Length: 565
Ligand code: F1P
Image (cartoon, rainbow, N blue to C red):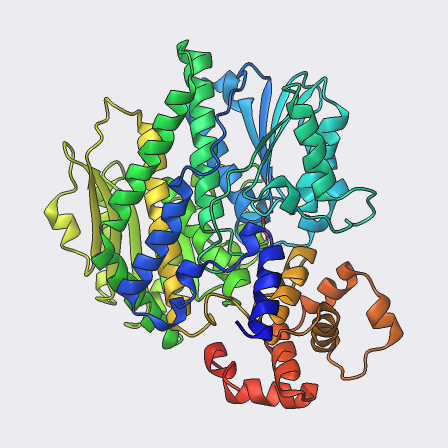
């Protein structure tokens, strides 16, 4: 190992697991679709490795359960709450479970990363929805154990333990929780996590932090982090439901059985690797031709599609219409707290009807259409829409789930080019319909994460397994940007930060005002700049000016090519 490699590996060791480079996917930028699926399959297998398994017991008799998080964690919170409230059904128990997403409901469809940095905002939102409640089970989700918004909420709970039982869900050991100062705040995330651990001894608070290995694309917690959040919290909520409404005794074995069922969903999904690879290729080709990928989903599979699509903007610097999701009945189907948000702009136009009115008339043969449905959806509606789309393009594909005893007719499947058709062996007697739907959601999440990630890799947006052109919109992403620069240049943190600031403030001469400003000022400016990390990287590697670095990037629009000096 030479000196540079040694420096890099020391740096890597110091990173929290969720920010590390996963050795499994190091070469994801050089493989074909089929190999890519195998890589993703191996990364996701780490979710089920029993390295750090904490059984969890919780008294379900609470007046309110609140799930909260930022970005993907908030979107998964929303999805879980929707399913749980549906499972409980009786109208007066409707409010038994509630969600908070940093930035409000608009964050479900667009990235609103600045509110994530505000601990006081998190606490205020929690206080508001819990007004008048006597017992609250609060689950704060932060995959990287880093979001100040969630830290503020957990701190609020710890100060009111008579009402709140706080739970922290994340995927790093506590000593790797973030220890950087937070906006207008005397404590940091790690302090809160340590206080949670202290309270755990008295069963007043709980920390759930299984370590799942690094993400396939470094730091992209929408992938494994999001899937594991769904699996863990679904198992806990289902346990609570069985105990509270069916009088069943919940044992650690039941929880394990539900986790094992998710592992079966994982195995089954990835066993369809040929179709998955074909879909990655089709989506990749389409993005390379500057065309679009449209997910047309029904019910909660529509939400999975919307979520996956919206994450591509911050993750890959994609345009909002590169990959877009649509759901039957639009916001009526979402049942989100703030209702119809379509007035906010084109990113919020999400119904199938909107698709037919605004996109279909100009759909091109290069655009990929991907239908997402199950045998429980209205198949007449599916075929009618597929028929309409077929009149414009044959680039029409599907992910379709059904049951051995209740299959989708062949005539429906024949309408699509590539069909990732999964016939599940679980019977409706064995699991209730909400649980079945949750498994289909998980399977579809794995497929769409693979398709959107794979397509952007094929487009050349990823270098090794790093998304270099990330948007530096909050303090976590600011730190990640510096880590990436250190990783690739071997330079000191100080040198990397200076280069990053030069790119952010668009200057070769940093003023005192710029260098002494706090990180929130930096991210505010960075939010309005393109390609800040690649620019900083080129400036360091070539020892050149800002203008020269920009010129180099202009000549190499594919990030992977631009990184060859
Ligand atoms: C929350 C989050 C991610 C998003 C991006 C910024 O992360 O919003 O969902 O993809 O990385 O942070 P976390 O708090 O769950 O770690």
